Image 1 (cartoon, rainbow, N blue to C red):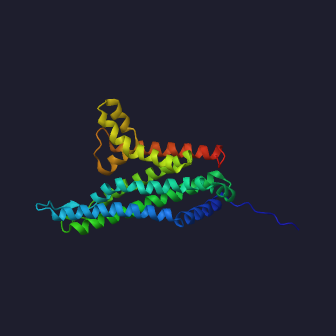
Image 2: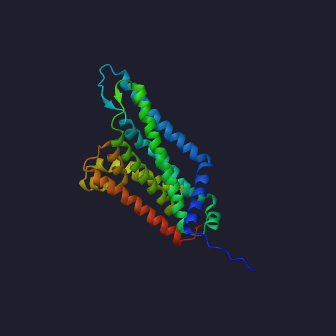
Image 3: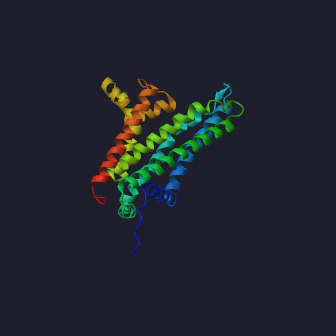
Length: 258
């Protein structure tokens, strides 16, 4: 009698790939350095802001400490975006993408598992750090601030981290280069949205409104002229979806080591 091999279902393969990606993500030093940078930025800024509020000779009590979650999320997101994109580009830099595809030859499964784990981890960590920043600001400024309004802030923070991480990860699959992807993310998420409106041309301001960094800034701090909540969400979703689509197409059609 000859034994027949049973085909493993896609769901089981995906679960195994996610487990492997999870282990891979948390067993490299870079992940912890990025988390430390994000924590120092968000919690540190929130603590300093709380201490300054407490030292104000004419304080205004009654504000919400959750403002710290949104404000510190703007600079803190870059450490987590770097975490998401290096989860992809480091494999190309070391040649690890080849054995990764040998273990998981179904490229769609590899793409979805890596995206799910990296984006999910960055989003959850971002929300936890935003909550920690809020608590730090609340304690440092006691009794001036309250903890009311968390459900109005956390969904926006989670969305910005999720969409931004997906955008960065998609660019990582597309460009396959850590330095190039970091520069591109930095330009589109920070430099160009801040710089273009300062030239004084209406078309440049309109162009800045179409960049993902403008959407993130509006959702977190709400100080972007010409943007609305709907336009901000749509803008970030389009950039994230476009980057993921282009990244998937390159992974599916090009050789892994090119």
